[in-house]
Length: 261
Image: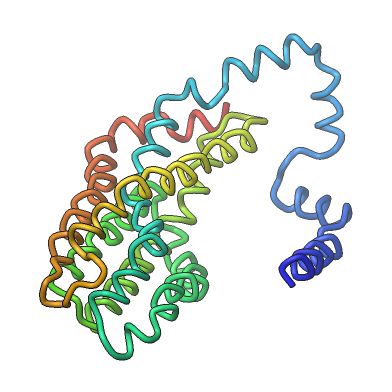
């Protein structure tokens, strides 16, 4: 079934993303035309290679800081499947325990609804300010669970975390695309996804230990200490907005100029 669904998905994509559709999208977005790309390919290989080396994203300190400083707040994504299922099963009884799959998947469902709405109403807002505000709201959400395991606090955590995510996640891609030098957008956006993968690895290194010590299995609910666990997770997530605030003057300096190069 998974293979069949994958093939159907590929067929749908192939149906819509035709050469004509791509050409129209590039024309509307103001990207380079095929003629521009052909002219670029005619440049000497050495010249092209030197350009990519000079502008490779690893050499861009602001870009590297930006994508890696988001790892602390991104750990909350990983906790959706590393911590929330066990937390719902061990720290709750009744409806939450019996239907933890719903709460685990509530964030993806809500982000699907909230992202276009939030993006529309905040389209004119400054990208970096939205990054700060979004990561701040998302980073504060675990402190709600630090008050104790209740269905109301669980819903509040998921809703507020998702709202923060909807505010900053689309702006992350926008910022990466805007800061990338000419002809380097694809490389910048590709490397910008690496911390998302790294977050899953980093979070998995300690999530199990916290569950064993603060929310162990086969332990009565009154014997758990999930409040302290989420308090620590909140402290970790808050590193991102605090760092973005402290680095604001450095990050926004010459921002528009770089993209125009």
